[in-house]
Image (cartoon, rainbow, N blue to C red; front, side, top):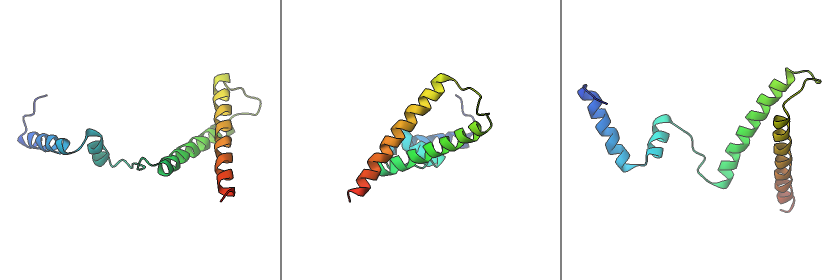
Length: 101
C-alpha cells in the first residue's frame, strides 16, 4: 500500500503509535464504538439474554407467516427444541436460586 498524501501518512503513523499503546481489539472497540459487556458473568449473560430474545422475536415473526400445517426442516426444529429445553432448565435454576434467598 502506497500512501502519497502526507495527511494519510500522518494518520497512519498516529494509528500505529496508538496501537503500540493498546491492543488491536481495544483500538477497534474504541474506533467502532463497540459496547462491551465487561466480561463479567452477569453483564455477559444479560447481553446474551437480549440476543436470545431478539432471535426469538424474529423467529416468532417468521413463524407467524406460516400456516400451522406447513413444515420446517427437522434439523431446525431439533435445534429449537434443544435450545428451549436448555433455556427452561436455566430459568428453573435462576428461579430456584431466587427462592432460596
